[in-house]
Amino acid sequence: MTIVYLSLGTNMGDRAAYLQKALEALADLPQTRLLAQSSIYETTAWGKTSQADFLNMAYQLDTQLTAADFLKETQAIEQSLGRVRHEKWGSRTIDIDILLFGEEVYDTKELKVPHPYMTERAFVLIPLLELQPDLKLPPNHKLLRDYLAALDQSDITLFSAQ
Image 1 (cartoon, rainbow, N blue to C red):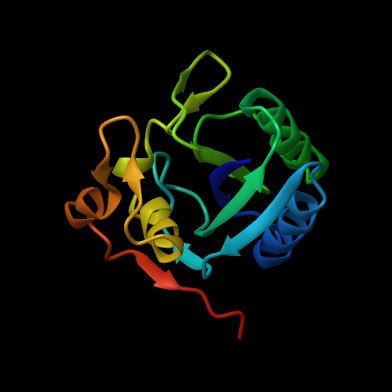
Image 2 (image 1 turned 45 degrees about the vertical axis):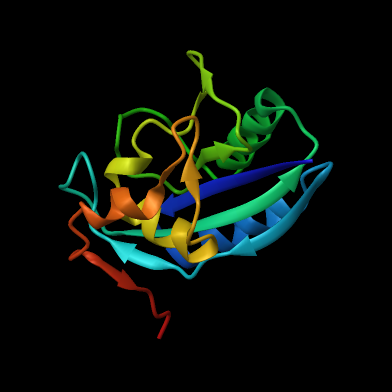
């Protein structure tokens, strides 16, 4: 079994419902067990900032799937929830990023793990570190909280469904 950390984000439609549907679909993945989920955070858009605010969270899973098969499964979930990849950093119904896949490192056209931007995004690191405060980045094993300490966290708030 391999421990996998995911980042989930959405900024279209009923954002909380999209997160819930994605979590339900992840729970149904073959040879995969859900271990923990973070709180949900509301954040301003990153990259292309002229769009609606995002809801973001992190998820920890245990899987027997290969990284390539796991990626195919997460992309199928995104597609089933209406994800259209037409603009880099554009609005989306759901985004499921593989942050870490055990201690493995991948650098292919399809899959880059550890996620190449995770150390630059407080909206990824805050929920991720909620799950595992002492998590380290392979292959250098630097503590992820050290990356977070250098980032602006002012636009991230705990989400309340009200």
